[in-house]
Amino acid sequence: MVPPLQSRQTRIDVAVRKNVPGTSPLSDAHFAPMKAAVLSEFGQALTLEELPVPEPRDDEVLIEVEVCGVCHSDLHIVDGDLPRFKVATKPHLIPGHEVVGRVVQRGAAVSHLEVGDRVGVPWRHGNCGTCELCREGYENLCQQGGVTGMTVDGGYAQFMRARASHALRIPDALRSDEAAPLLCAGVTSYRALKKAGVAPGQRVAVFGIGGLGHLAVQIACAMGAEVIGVDVSADKLAFARELGAVDAIDATDLEALKALRKRGGVHVAIVTSASHAAFDAALQCLRPTGTLGVVGLPAEPLRIPAISLVASEARIIGSAVGTRDDIRAVLEMAALGQLRCRVEIRPLSQVNAVLDEMRRGAIHARVVLDPRT
Image (tube, rainbow, N blue to C red; front, side):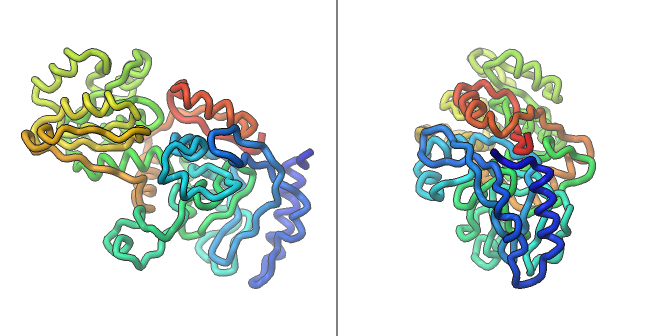
């Protein structure tokens, strides 16, 4: 039986007050285990286990997790269906990389965060700051920093440790459940639109109005674009209009998609879906010189006809989550009311049910797990 959270928190608070450089202040709290969902075998259900509360290193903070978002990348990690993810996944992993919680202990070298600060922990666990990519501003592509919930344990637990440099303060105006998905889904959508160079007055099509897509619609609207939502679900198309899309097109209506191209096409098409058909349709909807932004991750390779790129001078861009500055920009947009994430809160104990729903495509926006319930 896991002890009540309040009793465990009392022990953590006592340990924090004892924190002095060179000591392990949580040693007194190790008899109080934490709940965590653990990946022991690819393609199998996560197991709910009782584990010791982790001890932060000098450059880390210990966080009491309030919520952790469930991302489609988590599903790829759990199922092991993407070789690049599978080979990097640590054994006995605690997944989760959209984490919001409170700092309950800081390492000896951490000075910019205080106990009690509410912070978010994103996909990137850290970055080296010295490699060529980091120096050029691509810290999100650094090969040295590790990945939260893949190479290091994540937030499907009551406590987690995080690199203090990548634990970002959450604005007071945001609820924790609203903020968590912005740390991956939000910043991924933002960076894709930013890299595509979206400008006021341009036409932007968002393919897939789900967890990422409903955020992409709002971000593109905030950038001043005329947004068109594309999906197979009538409910999601109506949702896209509610979020500010000027038009919404059924992805199975080939004539409507052709008409979009005949009207001049779109400057930017962002595909958040993992459907090959969505990528094919998005490429056909581009105007000459248009940009296709790849965000969704189909399990099989894409097949893009070279003539489609050459004849119209189109370009294809990839976008990998975002930098810390990108995350701060998205959080600020949300704090200003320009962006709202549709969220459902579920207890950590339902993690496998949530992953099954995601496999079936039954998740319409974002789900966050609350390990305190």
